[in-house]
Image 1 (cartoon, rainbow, N blue to C red):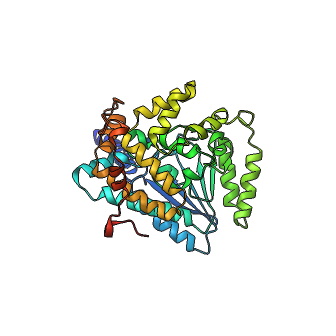
Image 2: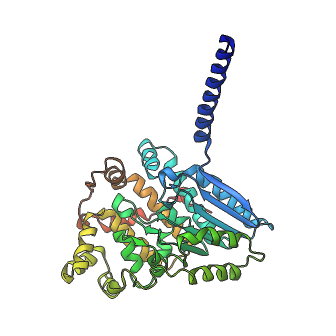
Image 3: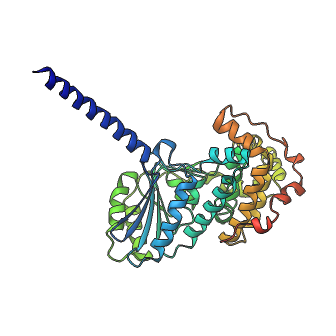
Length: 382
């Protein structure tokens, strides 16, 4: 082989390698964070950030919101499906670290993120077309907001649900003040204060999901939904019911909190968080001791805000709850515990937050009431 040919071959190989590298860099750089596709007569939203468990950020919210409205008003679209990629998570929550950084700097993201997220939560709750969330994996915080207000929520054995916000100095937002007090008895208050995790079929048994379908059946379920000739809520319900009836996994296991439900209703029926803690300590059972220990690690301010949030939210519309929660989000951005909680749990991960105030007794009713005060012209509007 001549030197010229060798040189040109080498150049071509180098060039193709460079193109491959650039192509890879380009593809990893421009990989969309959310996919919005029309499949048949279905609008399909796919959260596409598997490396961060499909955490929800502002740019994703800004893509999903207008598309949801467009599909809701489009005569060619009958149903809306939302799901996540990666096999681990539907959506593990909002991009909280970015929000805390913005809050420290006084950046507008600290308002924009919550405002636009809550407007999207309301749009899901009022969507006139069947909205089906396939919550096949971790579903927490912001992921709950993208699913729980929709007409249909399908859990699988891989679903892990929690509202763990009191552990980071926040509160169970994204409409938690609406759906949690509407769960049976005091279950919602228990989940809100403790951040207790529900798994698999228990997510449906608690009333958070409407259906349970085995994970391996989800692709077939989605195909059947997309191919529905008439996509009324009744027909969607019929398809989901039939897949649920074929899913027998864990059906013989009782609800994880079954034996504790009467205790939860009794112990969490108090007019204050301090009263709940006293009830738990006085009860003395293993379950009660464990829950008292959990609550002792949470932000005292968050616990008191959350208690009042659910108490008020029980009789409010979703829209009014979100207006209230936006006020609370901004109070948390002005406070200290949210930044300290994120530091301890997500940044330094020492799991040792220094709450301020450090006890429930030091959190005055007046300071809690202030968190619920109107923001005037800065209030959330729809």
